[in-house]
Length: 247
Image 1 (tube, rainbow, N blue to C red):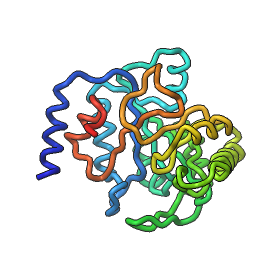
Image 2: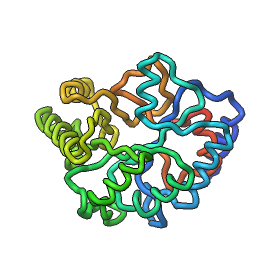
Image 3: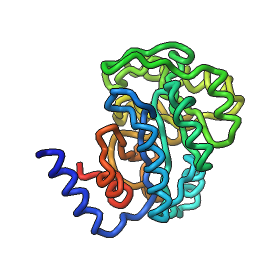
């Protein structure tokens, strides 16, 4: 009953005007796993097609930064982001990105590159450096830091926050010989003190767990994202593209 009511509310919300600004979508993985954070490959394709059907444009996080710097964030733009760096981002997501020629940002937990990371749902093999280099070289995927070990940053000392952020950033900058100035807060956890540390570590843009649309007035270290999960229905997703989230 609850899921039906939520779907109904999203369906009604689709009748409202589209909100202004750029929408950042947050994913984790793509595939046929029994995992609440894994979107099926079929749904991922459908969602990219739905973005196009609504006349929206998928842009990179770098392009969004340029828009913000110009103080003119285009309405009807969407950024795709993926957290953690699971290997299905290569096996299942990457072919879809190439098929539709759409960009995405992957926030990598650098301490688990090429390893297996356990979660409550399943064991997650993580991307290898070889896979990551191929994806980065395609011009469609940009890798950015997501800490070294994925702690809840609000639960650890600020010096540990600094090490997690700077070490993960430096690892990727060395690996790809490029600046890495974007960051995703693990679990969306952040605070004013943590944002100060990020700025001191050279991070310019950070995405968090708040929902909404990015405008020229959005605080750079508090960029909102709307999460897409396995349970997200097509009616809900269509509504999210127009209005964000009900919650």
